[in-house]
Structure formats: structure tokens, C-alpha cells
Image 1: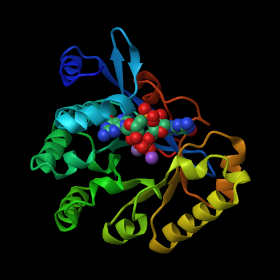
Image 2: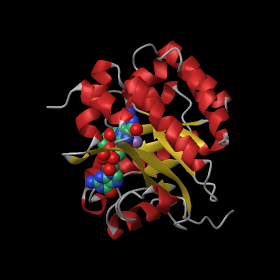
Image 3: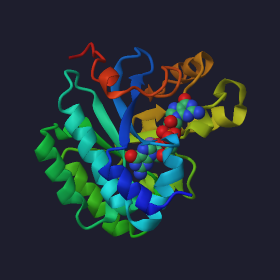
Image 4: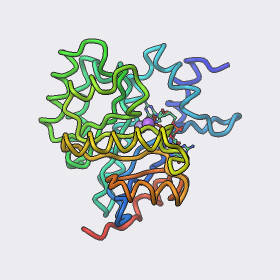
Length: 250
Ligand code: G
Ligand code: G
Ligand code: MN
Ligand code: NA
């Protein structure tokens, strides 16, 4: 059984770590950025997935402290890289609407010296359904700081289209459930084609999540999807690995 005390101790004992999943352009395979993924290196259980502890952190409010740790650690790290990869940080619903969030963001940018253009926040539909007017204001202020906002898990919520209409997203991330075996599945292919058309019409680039196979990659290339991430490239990278990635453009 996982307890909130375990989470508090884990942060004190430095048991959390970040891994980085590369995001690439689909045609050129040029690296553009990475998604920051949280891991817990538990002394007895080994690596514990966020699927197991994020819900507990959310229920107990500990997500505020943990989310800030992720944001600060990722920005401090990325600011030291020679490459100019952007970092995409997952933001839980409660974090986004917390009164201190905007101040925390600007503190972290100042403290790390990271250019705001290298930071992207990933929000899901769950983050934006509570008080839409208030959330829109927060998102606008984040964008005014020069930080980008991506819509994560697109297509899996209750009203992905309404959400897309309401908020000024800089990127649409197609959920992995639509990408898996896309070359063999008419329904998924149709949904992804429609999403790409939507992105194109709205002028919002689209990233496909969870690309594992060459055939999926080829399908997405043919359909002119902009970016991808997934195990096709390999497992998420450790900090020593991501910092050594080279970008041709810089
Ligand atoms: O990388 P992995 O498969 O373990 O991620 C599982 C889930 O945990 C995904 O939904 C992912 O978005 C989420 N997740 C990973 N890192 C973070 C984080 O730093 N903050 C939040 N809120 N969620 C995260
Ligand atoms: O919800 P979010 O999109 O942030 O979740 C990211 C999660 O997806 C992480 O848990 C990550 O480990 C997982 N993931 C990333 N790429 C792949 C992939 O190619 N295949 C599978 N099965 N999982 C992936
Ligand atoms: Mn994500
Ligand atoms: Na996702």
C-alpha cells in the first residue's frame, strides 16, 4: 500500500527522478524537444510508475509540491544543455488552477535562466473543464510569458473538440490509443486523418504519441503529421543521454 507519507519521504530522500522522451519531426527525424516523465526509484520496490502514485498525489494535494519539483528540476536541467531542445512538462489539473502557479512558473524560469520558448506545458481536458473562464485566463497569461501549451491525450476525453475550440493550444498530442497499429485499423486511421486535417485548418501542429513501429511511422509520414514520440526511438532517455542529443539546426 502506498501512503502519502511515502511520497513525502521520497521527495526528502531524493528518490524521484526524471526521464526524457524525445520528440522528433516526422519527415526529417530532427529532434525538436522532449517530454519530461517522472519516475520514483523506491528503495524496496524499484521503479514505481506515475500511474501508481500520481492519483494518490492528486487526492492528497501532494501533487502541488511534486509538480513544482518536476517543473523546477526539469528547467534547471534543461538550462544546462548545449542543445536547444524544448521540454514538455505534464501539469496536473490542480496545479494549473492553484493560486501560486503563475508565480511559481516565473520564479522557476528566473531561477533556472531557461528561455520560456523552450518550455511547454501539457494539459489534458481534465485540466480545463472545471472553471473554463478562469482557466482560459491562466492559459493566456502562461502564453504571454512565452510558454507553449499542448493538449495532451487528444481524443480520449468527453469533449475534445469543445476543448480545442475554447483554448489557444500550440500543439495537439494525439493519444497513443489511436496510433497503435494505425496502418491496420480503419477507424484509427480515419480519426487520425481527421485530427490532422483539424490541426492543419486551425494552424496547430500535431504530434502522434506512442509510435512503436516502422509501419506506424510511415503511415504518419504519408499523412503529413508534424511530430512524433514513442518507443520507436527507444526508451525514454536519462539526463546524461538527453543532454548529449544534437540538433542540426543549432
Ligand atoms: O511515463 P509513464 O508511462 O509512466 O506515464 C504515466 C502517466 O503519468 C502518463 O499519463 C503521464 O502523463 C503521467 N506523468 C508522467 N510524469 C508526470 C508528471 O511529472 N506530472 C504529472 N502530473 N503526470 C505525469
Ligand atoms: O499521458 P501521457 O501522454 O503524458 O503519457 C505518456 C506515457 O506514455 C508515459 O507513461 C510513457 O512511458 C508512455 N509511452 C510513451 N511512448 C510509448 C510507446 O511508444 N508505447 C507505449 N506503450 N507507451 C508509451
Ligand atoms: Mn503527456
Ligand atoms: Na498522452
